[in-house]
Length: 332
View (cartoon, rainbow, N blue to C red):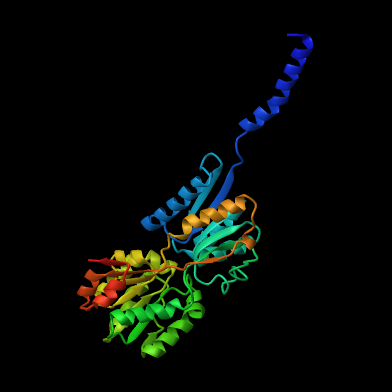
Protein backbone atom coordinates (compact mmCIF):
# COMPACT_ATOMS: atom_id res chain seq x y z
CA UNK A 1 0.00 0.00 0.00
CA UNK A 2 1.33 3.43 -0.86
CA UNK A 3 2.00 5.74 2.07
CA UNK A 4 -0.79 8.17 0.99
CA UNK A 5 -3.38 5.35 0.79
CA UNK A 6 -2.30 4.09 4.22
CA UNK A 7 -2.80 7.54 5.77
CA UNK A 8 -6.25 7.85 4.20
CA UNK A 9 -7.23 4.40 5.44
CA UNK A 10 -5.90 5.12 8.91
CA UNK A 11 -7.67 8.46 9.15
CA UNK A 12 -10.91 6.79 8.02
CA UNK A 13 -10.61 4.19 10.77
CA UNK A 14 -9.92 6.94 13.31
CA UNK A 15 -13.06 8.78 12.21
CA UNK A 16 -15.07 5.63 12.84
CA UNK A 17 -13.81 5.21 16.41
CA UNK A 18 -16.19 7.79 17.94
CA UNK A 19 -19.13 6.05 16.21
CA UNK A 20 -18.09 2.70 17.65
CA UNK A 21 -17.59 4.26 21.07
CA UNK A 22 -21.03 5.86 20.95
CA UNK A 23 -22.63 2.57 19.92
CA UNK A 24 -21.05 0.88 22.92
CA UNK A 25 -22.23 3.54 25.38
CA UNK A 26 -24.93 2.17 27.75
CA UNK A 27 -28.46 3.45 27.20
CA UNK A 28 -29.69 6.20 29.44
CA UNK A 29 -31.30 4.69 32.50
CA UNK A 30 -34.85 5.95 33.04
CA UNK A 31 -36.41 5.82 36.49
CA UNK A 32 -40.04 5.36 37.48
CA UNK A 33 -41.33 5.86 41.01
CA UNK A 34 -44.42 3.75 41.64
CA UNK A 35 -46.79 4.41 44.55
CA UNK A 36 -50.08 2.70 45.31
CA UNK A 37 -52.32 2.65 48.36
CA UNK A 38 -52.71 -1.12 47.98
CA UNK A 39 -50.75 -3.79 49.82
CA UNK A 40 -47.76 -5.61 48.34
CA UNK A 41 -49.33 -8.96 49.33
CA UNK A 42 -52.41 -8.33 47.18
CA UNK A 43 -52.30 -10.95 44.41
CA UNK A 44 -54.54 -8.87 42.12
CA UNK A 45 -52.23 -5.88 42.38
CA UNK A 46 -49.21 -8.00 41.52
CA UNK A 47 -50.94 -9.17 38.33
CA UNK A 48 -51.66 -5.57 37.31
CA UNK A 49 -48.09 -4.38 37.85
CA UNK A 50 -46.74 -7.39 35.97
CA UNK A 51 -48.89 -6.36 32.98
CA UNK A 52 -47.46 -2.84 33.27
CA UNK A 53 -43.87 -4.13 33.15
CA UNK A 54 -44.65 -6.48 30.25
CA UNK A 55 -46.03 -3.66 28.13
CA UNK A 56 -43.03 -1.44 28.94
CA UNK A 57 -40.70 -4.21 27.81
CA UNK A 58 -42.65 -4.57 24.56
CA UNK A 59 -42.06 -0.85 24.03
CA UNK A 60 -38.31 -1.25 24.54
CA UNK A 61 -37.96 -0.39 28.23
CA UNK A 62 -36.16 -3.25 29.97
CA UNK A 63 -35.54 -3.29 33.71
CA UNK A 64 -31.82 -3.34 34.42
CA UNK A 65 -30.88 -2.17 30.93
CA UNK A 66 -32.55 1.19 30.46
CA UNK A 67 -35.19 1.22 33.17
CA UNK A 68 -35.39 1.17 36.96
CA UNK A 69 -38.67 1.03 38.92
CA UNK A 70 -38.88 1.90 42.61
CA UNK A 71 -42.04 0.51 44.23
CA UNK A 72 -43.76 1.78 47.35
CA UNK A 73 -46.92 0.20 48.83
CA UNK A 74 -49.06 2.40 51.06
CA UNK A 75 -51.36 -0.39 52.36
CA UNK A 76 -54.14 2.12 53.03
CA UNK A 77 -52.09 4.08 55.57
CA UNK A 78 -52.30 7.79 54.73
CA UNK A 79 -49.23 8.71 56.79
CA UNK A 80 -47.23 6.05 54.99
CA UNK A 81 -48.54 7.22 51.61
CA UNK A 82 -47.47 10.82 52.30
CA UNK A 83 -44.04 9.68 53.49
CA UNK A 84 -43.52 7.51 50.42
CA UNK A 85 -44.69 10.30 48.12
CA UNK A 86 -42.04 12.64 49.50
CA UNK A 87 -39.43 9.89 49.33
CA UNK A 88 -40.11 9.05 45.69
CA UNK A 89 -40.17 12.68 44.56
CA UNK A 90 -36.83 13.24 46.30
CA UNK A 91 -35.35 10.51 44.06
CA UNK A 92 -36.13 12.76 41.05
CA UNK A 93 -37.53 10.00 38.81
CA UNK A 94 -38.37 10.62 35.17
CA UNK A 95 -42.02 9.71 35.83
CA UNK A 96 -44.31 8.66 38.66
CA UNK A 97 -46.85 5.85 38.45
CA UNK A 98 -49.80 6.42 40.78
CA UNK A 99 -52.75 4.22 41.65
CA UNK A 100 -55.81 5.56 43.53
CA UNK A 101 -56.95 9.05 44.45
CA UNK A 102 -55.12 9.42 47.81
CA UNK A 103 -51.82 8.57 46.12
CA UNK A 104 -52.21 11.14 43.34
CA UNK A 105 -53.16 13.79 45.88
CA UNK A 106 -50.08 12.98 47.98
CA UNK A 107 -47.73 13.11 44.97
CA UNK A 108 -49.16 16.40 43.71
CA UNK A 109 -48.48 17.94 47.10
CA UNK A 110 -44.80 17.11 46.51
CA UNK A 111 -44.32 17.97 42.83
CA UNK A 112 -45.89 19.91 39.99
CA UNK A 113 -43.09 19.14 37.54
CA UNK A 114 -42.43 15.38 37.53
CA UNK A 115 -44.91 13.65 35.16
CA UNK A 116 -47.54 11.55 36.97
CA UNK A 117 -49.53 8.83 35.20
CA UNK A 118 -52.43 7.56 37.30
CA UNK A 119 -55.19 4.95 37.36
CA UNK A 120 -58.21 4.08 39.54
CA UNK A 121 -59.16 7.70 40.14
CA UNK A 122 -62.87 8.47 40.37
CA UNK A 123 -63.02 12.27 40.00
CA UNK A 124 -59.81 13.73 38.54
CA UNK A 125 -61.35 17.12 37.81
CA UNK A 126 -63.17 17.53 41.13
CA UNK A 127 -60.06 16.32 42.96
CA UNK A 128 -57.98 19.01 41.23
CA UNK A 129 -55.77 16.60 39.30
CA UNK A 130 -56.79 17.85 35.85
CA UNK A 131 -58.41 20.95 34.39
CA UNK A 132 -60.37 18.83 31.92
CA UNK A 133 -60.28 15.29 30.61
CA UNK A 134 -59.20 16.34 27.13
CA UNK A 135 -56.53 18.81 28.30
CA UNK A 136 -55.33 18.00 31.84
CA UNK A 137 -53.06 21.03 31.80
CA UNK A 138 -50.72 20.01 34.60
CA UNK A 139 -48.19 17.28 35.30
CA UNK A 140 -50.76 14.51 35.88
CA UNK A 141 -52.84 12.41 33.50
CA UNK A 142 -54.10 8.85 33.29
CA UNK A 143 -57.27 6.81 33.67
CA UNK A 144 -60.50 7.48 35.53
CA UNK A 145 -62.47 4.39 36.47
CA UNK A 146 -66.18 5.34 36.77
CA UNK A 147 -68.55 8.07 35.60
CA UNK A 148 -70.55 9.84 38.33
CA UNK A 149 -73.75 8.11 37.18
CA UNK A 150 -72.33 4.75 38.26
CA UNK A 151 -73.55 5.31 41.81
CA UNK A 152 -77.15 5.21 40.66
CA UNK A 153 -76.41 2.22 38.45
CA UNK A 154 -75.07 0.17 41.38
CA UNK A 155 -78.27 0.87 43.32
CA UNK A 156 -80.47 -0.09 40.36
CA UNK A 157 -78.64 -3.37 39.72
CA UNK A 158 -78.72 -4.35 43.40
CA UNK A 159 -82.42 -3.57 43.59
CA UNK A 160 -83.04 -5.68 40.49
CA UNK A 161 -81.31 -8.75 41.90
CA UNK A 162 -82.69 -8.23 45.43
CA UNK A 163 -86.10 -6.54 44.96
CA UNK A 164 -86.94 -6.65 48.68
CA UNK A 165 -84.14 -4.24 49.50
CA UNK A 166 -85.54 -1.01 50.97
CA UNK A 167 -82.59 0.38 52.94
CA UNK A 168 -79.16 0.62 51.34
CA UNK A 169 -75.94 1.55 53.10
CA UNK A 170 -72.94 3.07 51.32
CA UNK A 171 -69.75 1.50 52.63
CA UNK A 172 -66.60 3.64 52.28
CA UNK A 173 -63.91 5.42 54.25
CA UNK A 174 -64.17 9.23 53.86
CA UNK A 175 -60.41 9.58 54.37
CA UNK A 176 -59.44 7.34 51.45
CA UNK A 177 -62.55 8.05 49.35
CA UNK A 178 -63.42 11.74 49.87
CA UNK A 179 -64.89 11.87 46.37
CA UNK A 180 -67.91 9.67 47.18
CA UNK A 181 -70.06 12.46 48.63
CA UNK A 182 -69.67 14.94 45.82
CA UNK A 183 -69.10 12.67 42.84
CA UNK A 184 -71.40 9.65 43.28
CA UNK A 185 -74.04 10.97 45.68
CA UNK A 186 -76.20 12.93 43.20
CA UNK A 187 -76.73 9.82 41.06
CA UNK A 188 -77.35 7.69 44.14
CA UNK A 189 -79.96 10.09 45.52
CA UNK A 190 -81.78 10.28 42.19
CA UNK A 191 -81.90 6.49 41.86
CA UNK A 192 -82.98 6.07 45.49
CA UNK A 193 -85.86 8.52 45.04
CA UNK A 194 -86.96 6.81 41.83
CA UNK A 195 -86.89 3.32 43.38
CA UNK A 196 -88.22 4.44 46.78
CA UNK A 197 -85.14 3.23 48.61
CA UNK A 198 -83.70 4.83 51.75
CA UNK A 199 -79.98 5.60 51.66
CA UNK A 200 -78.23 4.87 54.95
CA UNK A 201 -75.45 7.40 55.40
CA UNK A 202 -74.19 6.13 58.76
CA UNK A 203 -72.21 3.33 57.14
CA UNK A 204 -68.96 5.25 56.69
CA UNK A 205 -65.96 3.60 58.33
CA UNK A 206 -62.49 4.61 59.46
CA UNK A 207 -61.08 1.32 60.73
CA UNK A 208 -61.49 -2.35 59.94
CA UNK A 209 -62.82 -2.82 63.47
CA UNK A 210 -65.80 -0.64 62.51
CA UNK A 211 -66.94 -2.95 59.74
CA UNK A 212 -69.03 -5.44 61.67
CA UNK A 213 -70.97 -2.74 63.52
CA UNK A 214 -71.69 -0.95 60.25
CA UNK A 215 -72.92 -4.09 58.48
CA UNK A 216 -75.02 -5.02 61.50
CA UNK A 217 -76.63 -1.56 61.23
CA UNK A 218 -77.72 -2.47 57.70
CA UNK A 219 -78.87 -5.95 58.75
CA UNK A 220 -80.83 -4.93 61.86
CA UNK A 221 -84.08 -4.51 59.91
CA UNK A 222 -85.46 -6.50 56.97
CA UNK A 223 -84.73 -5.10 53.53
CA UNK A 224 -81.16 -3.99 54.15
CA UNK A 225 -78.59 -3.88 51.33
CA UNK A 226 -75.08 -2.59 50.82
CA UNK A 227 -73.15 -0.78 48.11
CA UNK A 228 -69.42 -1.29 48.65
CA UNK A 229 -68.03 1.86 47.07
CA UNK A 230 -64.79 1.96 45.05
CA UNK A 231 -62.26 2.83 47.71
CA UNK A 232 -58.77 1.75 48.74
CA UNK A 233 -60.13 0.84 52.17
CA UNK A 234 -62.84 -1.47 50.83
CA UNK A 235 -60.35 -3.10 48.44
CA UNK A 236 -57.86 -3.78 51.21
CA UNK A 237 -60.54 -5.20 53.52
CA UNK A 238 -62.70 -6.86 50.88
CA UNK A 239 -62.40 -10.38 52.28
CA UNK A 240 -63.68 -9.27 55.68
CA UNK A 241 -66.48 -7.20 54.11
CA UNK A 242 -67.58 -10.13 51.93
CA UNK A 243 -67.53 -12.52 54.91
CA UNK A 244 -69.54 -10.14 57.12
CA UNK A 245 -72.11 -9.39 54.41
CA UNK A 246 -72.62 -13.11 53.82
CA UNK A 247 -72.69 -13.91 57.55
CA UNK A 248 -75.37 -11.29 58.26
CA UNK A 249 -77.29 -12.07 55.07
CA UNK A 250 -76.92 -8.61 53.54
CA UNK A 251 -77.13 -8.45 49.73
CA UNK A 252 -74.17 -6.37 48.57
CA UNK A 253 -72.90 -5.03 45.27
CA UNK A 254 -69.21 -4.38 44.65
CA UNK A 255 -67.39 -2.20 42.13
CA UNK A 256 -64.91 -4.79 40.87
CA UNK A 257 -65.45 -8.24 39.36
CA UNK A 258 -62.77 -9.99 41.40
CA UNK A 259 -64.74 -9.17 44.56
CA UNK A 260 -67.61 -11.32 43.31
CA UNK A 261 -65.17 -14.03 42.29
CA UNK A 262 -63.89 -13.98 45.87
CA UNK A 263 -67.38 -14.60 47.26
CA UNK A 264 -69.29 -11.33 46.97
CA UNK A 265 -72.84 -11.54 45.65
CA UNK A 266 -72.62 -9.16 42.74
CA UNK A 267 -70.13 -6.87 41.04
CA UNK A 268 -70.60 -4.29 38.33
CA UNK A 269 -67.76 -2.10 37.22
CA UNK A 270 -64.46 -1.66 35.46
CA UNK A 271 -61.61 -4.12 35.37
CA UNK A 272 -58.93 -2.39 37.45
CA UNK A 273 -56.17 -4.12 35.52
CA UNK A 274 -57.09 -2.70 32.10
CA UNK A 275 -55.32 0.68 32.49
CA UNK A 276 -51.93 -0.73 33.53
CA UNK A 277 -50.61 -1.63 30.05
CA UNK A 278 -52.09 1.65 28.79
CA UNK A 279 -50.26 3.58 31.51
CA UNK A 280 -47.07 1.98 30.23
CA UNK A 281 -47.85 3.44 26.81
CA UNK A 282 -48.34 6.90 28.30
CA UNK A 283 -45.04 6.67 30.16
CA UNK A 284 -43.34 5.57 26.93
CA UNK A 285 -44.74 8.65 25.18
CA UNK A 286 -43.55 10.88 28.02
CA UNK A 287 -40.07 9.34 27.88
CA UNK A 288 -40.04 10.12 24.16
CA UNK A 289 -40.84 13.80 24.71
CA UNK A 290 -44.60 14.26 25.09
CA UNK A 291 -46.02 16.21 28.03
CA UNK A 292 -48.65 14.87 30.44
CA UNK A 293 -50.53 18.17 30.07
CA UNK A 294 -51.19 17.25 26.43
CA UNK A 295 -52.20 13.61 27.03
CA UNK A 296 -55.95 13.34 27.69
CA UNK A 297 -57.30 11.65 30.78
CA UNK A 298 -58.96 8.48 29.52
CA UNK A 299 -62.28 7.22 30.89
CA UNK A 300 -63.11 3.55 31.20
CA UNK A 301 -65.96 2.72 28.83
CA UNK A 302 -66.43 -1.04 29.30
CA UNK A 303 -67.83 -2.62 32.45
CA UNK A 304 -68.37 -6.20 33.54
CA UNK A 305 -71.29 -7.74 35.42
CA UNK A 306 -70.26 -10.69 37.59
CA UNK A 307 -72.73 -12.71 39.68
CA UNK A 308 -71.88 -15.25 42.33
CA UNK A 309 -74.80 -17.63 42.07
CA UNK A 310 -73.63 -19.67 45.06
CA UNK A 311 -73.76 -16.59 47.30
CA UNK A 312 -77.12 -15.61 45.87
CA UNK A 313 -78.61 -18.99 46.72
CA UNK A 314 -77.15 -18.81 50.25
CA UNK A 315 -78.94 -15.46 50.67
CA UNK A 316 -82.20 -17.00 49.45
CA UNK A 317 -82.36 -14.88 46.31
CA UNK A 318 -84.12 -16.11 43.20
CA UNK A 319 -82.13 -14.57 40.39
CA UNK A 320 -84.13 -14.38 37.14
CA UNK A 321 -82.76 -16.05 34.03
CA UNK A 322 -83.05 -12.76 32.17
CA UNK A 323 -80.61 -11.23 34.66
CA UNK A 324 -78.22 -14.17 34.44
CA UNK A 325 -78.21 -13.97 30.66
CA UNK A 326 -76.92 -10.37 30.85
CA UNK A 327 -74.02 -11.26 33.10
CA UNK A 328 -70.49 -11.39 31.71
CA UNK A 329 -69.67 -14.11 34.23
CA UNK A 330 -71.80 -16.35 36.45
CA UNK A 331 -69.98 -18.11 39.28
CA UNK A 332 -71.66 -21.39 40.14
